[in-house]
Image (cartoon, rainbow, N blue to C red):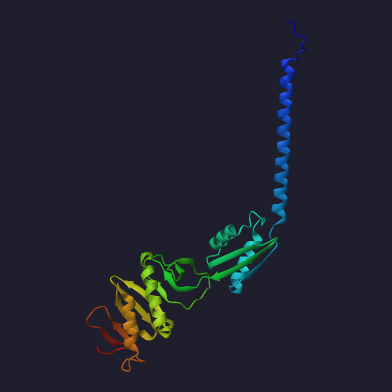
Amino acid sequence: MIRPNRKRRPASRNRMKRVLNRIGRLCAGMAGLTLVLVSAWWLNQALSVEVWTIRGVPEYLETAIDTELNTMKTLDFIHARPSRLRRILLARLPDLGDISIARSLPDRLEIIARERIPVALWQNPDGKVSLVDGKAVPYRTLHRGEQLDLPLLRTFRSDLGEAVNLLLAVKPASNDRYAHLSELISEGNSWRFNFDRGQSWLLPRGDGGQHIRDLISLMQQKRWRGGDWRIDARLPTRWFIRKSKIGGVV
């Protein structure tokens, strides 16, 4: 059998062609990836935050939020994610109770914030005084020269929860009584409430909320209304009531 003569390409030429094809595909892929990255970078910059509105908080806190946003190095689309900004602002501004941030494309933030309201001052065993919120969280120390008309808690950190619950039991039962409360002190197995004009209450630990409601109800009776009293209500069967000045047991 006679076969025609066929010229065979050298193996090295075939390998070179395959290498060139692979390089071509790689370059095309890199060019496509570069185009995607450049487009993403451009879009990220194009959607940078330029303006924002802040609502729901007093002027001092609005200014603080505005200052924090202005001092951030970049507010492009990635770095201005609402969840990220919320986390940063809550960490940097302890007077913020909560904050909601929404993006309004292309370049606006809509911010609704809520101020954290202190219910008391706390003096820890080291003597430092901090603001305490309604969840019994001491969230910052007093600023120099800051004056707040709030009850002072003298107790350990572990007792703050019970102390704040007692305060919050006084306020709705008698807002006037709460306004005249100066100190709440932990004394072993009891709590001492010190009011103005030498008035005070001694309550046992435990169901303090019920004791408070009963005490306020008692003080609203005609016999006791308007007087300045020192009350020891630690015994379940007998309470001792004295005049806040020199006087006998009633």
